[in-house]
View: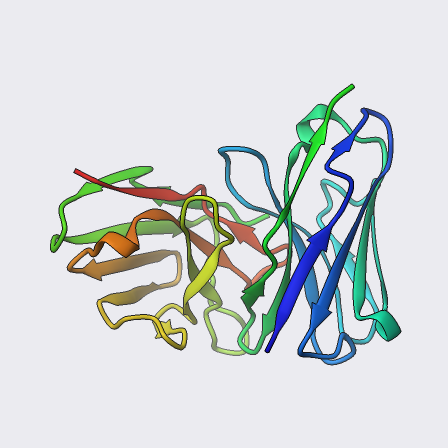
Length: 117
Length: 112
């Protein structure tokens, strides 16, 4: 069945770079788009960016200068890198898979990242 | 970016009560292809969001038919006809018509 699972460091210092991995199973990354969505504690959801099945990417303009999404199809992994972290980047980070008619039908469990010195 | 405004921010209900949540968009969500990409999701406490409704009114597989969605253009509504305990959590509308995809601020459904 379709599964997505995020992994990452948990705690990152301000100004450092965050690296997260989304490991997927049950589908091919070349056939489906995978997005990153984040949620600050107690707040709403924010779409960050997407890597499409053809490998191209799109980013939220508010994060574009700091964000990079890539993948390794042989390992079924999608990567998020975000530089110059601030305390406001503290959030649970989710990866999610799109399905037809443009919706996120599958979500990972999320990984909490705290930005603190 | 498209702004989605959800009301009310908090909804108190008793079991069996019918409730509605509004989602208003800053722009029409009617795509040039004729589809309206307005979705609803539910996030229970401590869990990931889960999809409920897509294309305004189509239920995701496994979603009980006490949930229904309606609306067009810029005004949309999620209705729960007879709240059950498992329905408690935060409801989000989300649009995919215009990039970037955006979410409403959420409506928290609690027991009265």
